Length: 197
Image (cartoon, rainbow, N blue to C red):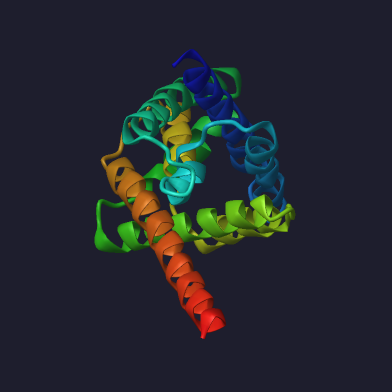
């Protein structure tokens, strides 16, 4: 349990650093520098909810453990964001403006699902030995406006605010990751059957 929590806090810190830079300098450079956060999560084996969802069955992750990872990511992410906001007042207005554009809506949910798909693809490519899935995937979902629940909660922490859309982000990220895994697994099963024939 202790290691599970520590690695989840580490993941929040790493994503937090990426989000800090994104809020600080914005586009076009910020999204690329944000990649360091997810890349470090992968290399250091940290517990990031959005990086684990799609591998729930592959890695035999317990739902209770995934729930703990999510809770720790959200709580530590929010607290970390609050610290960032107190340390750098310039971030607060940017974070507040960003949150004002979020809505508890179907389009927001779709953007969260698509982010989950991108996260699965990015981590899967990393697991195959290449960092390029992460280096391209992270800027892709940021430029596209897809919604990442842990990045979002860190942004809320910076603004010392709360938005109900965080629940859509969590559900969407989970569904998108599982959907991508299922589609990939189905394709892999078809290819296996074809080889047998």
